[in-house]
Length: 226
Image 1 (cartoon, rainbow, N blue to C red):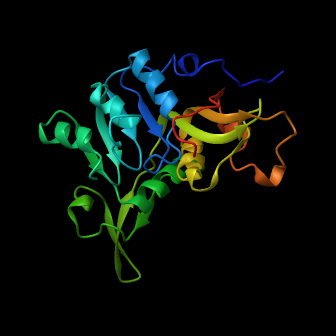
Image 2 (cartoon, rainbow, N blue to C red):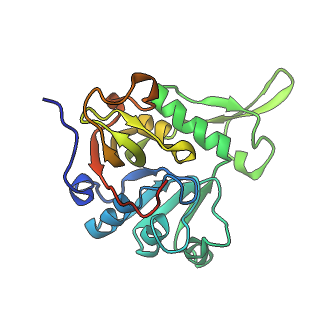
């Protein structure tokens, strides 16, 4: 019998290794798997490359992982905000690396990884510092930059409900990067607000099919209701 549910967030993240590339869902606090991240802090993995929309908020979730000194590099599209002081301080001190990627580009790089594509050309960032060292091409008279797929060893994702096969639904805008990160990672680990019985989720509401999910853990009282 297929049952992808794991008893605790700690058990779900137990095999994340030093040096792993970890995709972390969320747009600010919406859809961020805070409990999985804090379990990862307790687990102790270091030298991580984290891919996320932003570089953490306040001192919880991703910001707490960064503050704990576990992250070597952040790949994100929005590193600077009034409440991202943890990353900002470490970056200014030269203690953490940053790869800044336009938001649409980071989404498409993740999608390309999940779809098995070798990359894509986009006009975004052509002629800027973000295109340095990358292949460029003129297509229909317009400059384009070649972007490679963005794979993850693990993805930490927050969803609303999930069944034992790993089929997932999301809560409105908390969906954000979750579905494409599930597809782009070798091992996807998901925290859900509530467990659904098999067959309980209407097929048309399932956003992420269970084939993309390795483990699910139930966190009924998550730090953020979204």
